[in-house]
Image (cartoon, rainbow, N blue to C red):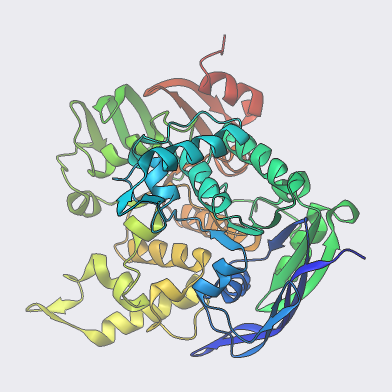
Length: 496
């Protein structure tokens, strides 16, 4: 039997009205890559935070290298060789790569920082990773993939024995994910133990030796990845069988053009023209940087166009701001919900009412009863999991945060909804709920512009797909012509 590096023993943690962890016990073996999976709100992040010192459990023990602790602190965690890389990077953009790697513990010559030693050691780490990153570069100038590698280098420089990665691939391209996997494979051969949290279940089978499934704060089971499959994981995660990945939709697409773009330029785009029909889900495909989000920003008024025209329901749009776009019946569910979609320190009802304060106020005085009733209605209709609409957004899971963003926009009663990466960082069960929500909105007469980096999602949900590359539309596909190969050919500019 392999020796354990870390043991969670009967860990319990409760928040007001919520049991985040209930008597959870999990063993992490030395030298393994151990996956932690479950729906948003299952307790994964809370569990790992108990061993990093970010969360103090109400009960149970944490055992590291046979040493038992009732609670950890960040300092104690680092002392025991534990490092964590969260989905939101903990880097300072204005500092160099080397300065970030050695932040707070820079080598010194007397009272002066020894920059040469710092940069030399950083370069040696990157050489081990077969990665060419200049330690003197500013972090703000790096791609997301390189920032991820800098985070790993920072952990390695501290002689990490247990590396915890929370949704590390959520914002990476396919090539960047493969580069990260190669580095993790190297770390494993060097004896580093890895806990890997991801909603991308196919990654679990590429990378991990064992997988622990959690649901509603409980440990469901731990399995060898070689002895299970994706269908079993999904069923164990959600507590039910998901027979359809993409639910059927009964919608009626009309010839009525609800939005038209004519030779739209600006924000990195060139001469974009297309029609969006009432009742349609129009997908936008393409590689990262192709211009999909940039197109959404132009349509919604986040960025200004330099040329072309937008017509909404046959009328020339004069919108130059998101506020005006909402008045014209357009809503945007942004890619980065935490920075652009919600205010994390505000409660659910305050976030939902944000876009309609004028409608539910009299003489600038907010009608709190209306605000409460609207929030309760959307909590029920969208199945937002929370003990109260007074709960702060930061305490919700990613899937439920996404539902609050949608509720806020639906309260404004838009005709056109732009979804930018609607299921990024969301588990399988919550994805299915978002898909059902999209279908119900379309069936009720709404129209969708759907942006997704997941090709299967795009093909499963869209009625038609426009593919972008380098700021231009390079292809258009009807449902009957959908294929990953065809989309990639247009996206990479190799289509004939």
